[in-house]
Length: 270
Image 1 (cartoon, rainbow, N blue to C red):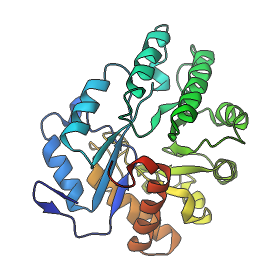
Image 2: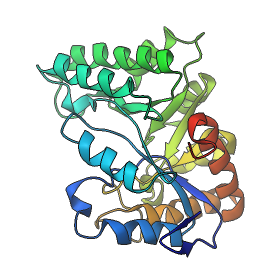
Image 3: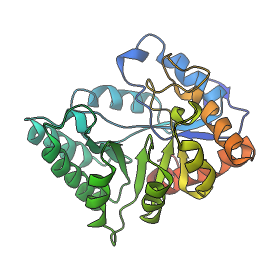
């Protein structure tokens, strides 16, 4: 793929999760995209947050068709009293047929459990939408693996697929997740060391892994503490290759294939 005359020469990579439409990129978004292409990135998937982020996300997808792919959902930390109106926006947007995934959604019980029950309810609404539109669901799981896995068990015999975004669980949980047909989204956290992700990456078959940045958050080493961007996914890929004792080419090839298997609608750059 060529964007603004740039053709990547590195193994193709897919960033399955990046919020490049946020204000952190307003001053240099074009350069961020070009940097990503230089590092071999061929597609970037943009998860929505709430109704306030929708316009910016869609504008970016329109600016970079065939490269930036929008998804639609309500982030669990955005689930508040107005969740009904927010979900109306989600449903209306999905009816346009312009989105490539459902999310991000899920359950976040890290700091505030005030809306825990609502988060569970809204998560199930997202699952039903994913099944309705035959789209993958992008799951945010923070301090909530038990709750999420319990809900997913209800849909175990359905065609539901997707990604556990920014995976931080242990190997036992990873085995449950992959057994249900979900991918593990591996991002900058894997470069931090002593997180337990090394064991997960080492012992999980490469066919169950996809790469992500979660830009502008969770920048990998050696950029930790800085604003993250999609070009830094190469550090993630290199770390995965090192942990597994394989090559960057192998990791890039497998994770790109896996990502396209999840985002089937984007396989041909639709």
